[in-house]
Structure formats: C-alpha cells, structure tokens
Length: 73
Image 1: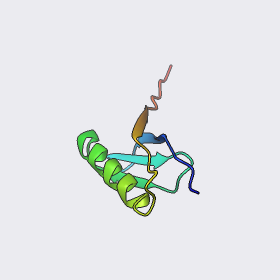
Image 2 (image 1 turned 120 degrees about the vertical axis):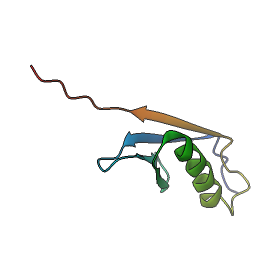
Image 3 (image 1 turned 180 degrees about the vertical axis):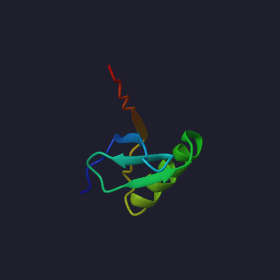
Image 4 (image 1 turned 120 degrees about the horizontal axis):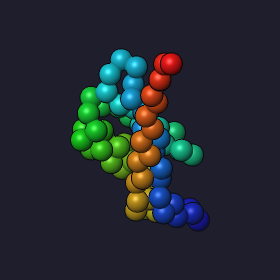
C-alpha cells in the first residue's frame, strides 16, 4: 500500500543566470522558469508528472522562496 503524501515543499531560489529554480524537498523534482508566475505553472505540472502513477499524490504544494542579499560595509 502506498503512503499518502499530504504536501510537497519546494525550495525556490533565484538562478545565477536569471529566473528561478524550484527543488522539491524529499522528492526528485526540479524545475525552472524565467518568472514566478511561470514557475508556479511548471511546479504544478512537474508534481503531476512525478506522481502520475500514484493516486495518493500530494494535495498541497508549498513554495518556500529564498533570497540571498549581500551587503558590503
């Protein structure tokens, strides 16, 4: 029996070359896009593809946005 996964969490970071990357924590799902609106669409599509054979796919996708800022003194 397959265990139900309620939620999948993605770590979202700005890519060095521009745009954004999203990596799922605990699953092997990675996607990228030029803007956050498109990234949201890509994340949903990637989760659907990853869990295509699993009827117990997650109902919630959480995006955790991380932004690094460098300050000089």
